[in-house]
Length: 190
Length: 190
DNA sequence: GTTTGTCAATACGCATGCGTATGGAAAATC
DNA sequence: GATTTTCCATACGCATGCGTATTGACAAAC
Image (cartoon, rainbow over all chains, first blue to last red; front, top):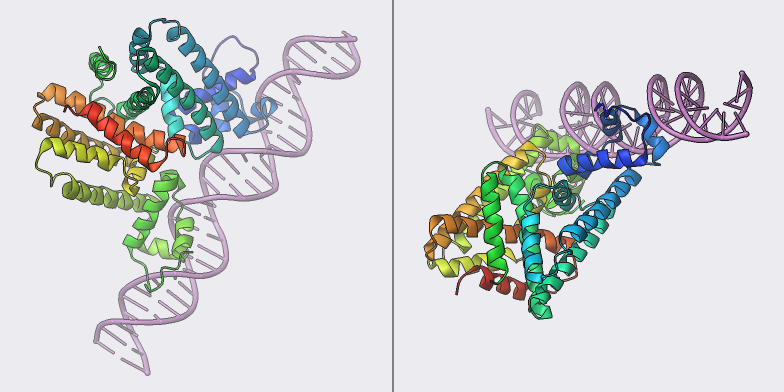
């Protein structure tokens, strides 16, 4: 029952944002309309006015996430002209504690829902694709760039999980920073 | 309702094995006693004779997995005396389609259950530890070995997910093999 | 052959969580 | 100011899935 003060009435976007918060921390399966309603300070009656069912809510939320994430990448990564610098920036961005990463990690978990799998595939493909492009941009041939992109992206995905699993062990912020640096030097040629 | 022919009556191990099969393909949340009972050709009545509840079943199944996995590592990895060869063997083993890997991947997904998180932490720690040892065995100092172990293990975890997510894209068996080789050469010094 | 122990079937209670039906209050529109 | 829209509350039906209670069949022990 968070009192977001001013707003008189809710719109779909409010529900989507609240849903993403749940997805980020507890996964898709934990999305329960009555809980999110409570979180927003209303009841189910409100929800079914804005959405037709739970699945629609989740799909809308994921679309929003996908769109927002794409925007961040465009602004923070593609704005860098030099491929080498761009790759380094990507690795550093990956290590930052953004909600977007948490969501990606939980989606990997809830892949059994076909609509989750769909979004996941799209996002992953796109990310692999721009990684590959960047590696080609520093001189790798296509095949090699593809493998290196896959390897790099695996490191990203793996890291997301390790961070959660180890939770407080190698968690000291400076260590993360230095680890990200280390990874970048290992995977991007000097 | 798989007809496993001969056996007259079931024992806990039968339930655990069937449970691991469900966990491997659908995750911990999908473990439903009535379904597994059906799979074994019996009903709930049988289950509650062998186990006190669902949670006990899952914990027992995960213990079994942990034990079996440890045995495989001991036999297939630690039996290799040369650290360099041992690391290479580990990377290749990681790319093989074993149920154990599937289970690990789904556990990463169902971390919200505290008993899953516990097993996961234990297993991950142990694996990181023997990777680190092996990297020290080829001359890395402790700090460096630790980072490299984390990096390598992240690649493993990431790969598990990518394989599932991409499902049929870079799935050609030979490609996996060659990718594993590529990864090994990237992460283990010649 | 009677008794006891092992394993399983059936039937029930109960909690959770989705979706629906209906009614009501406040704001926008006329 | 009356009416329509917008947004939400309450109450219900219904499915799923856990756990329990009770009974029964078959085998081993005595």
